[in-house]
Length: 82
Image (cartoon, rainbow, N blue to C red; front, side, top):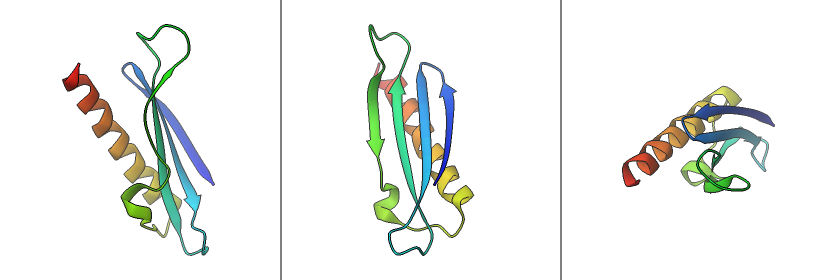
């Protein structure tokens, strides 16, 4: 398993490249939490543990990159909705 995390404005993004069940690549996963402007603990804004319908990437870096792109698009959509 490979993980990455970063802040994007009021959000904290966690991405993962999980080994595919058959062992033939990596599945991308993402969790987006709103951490600022929320009383108490962070609020989960989005979660998907099998992005792109479970597509398998050959390298973990590819899965992490896809997950981060997806997460940033979600954060942008959340900002526009606010």
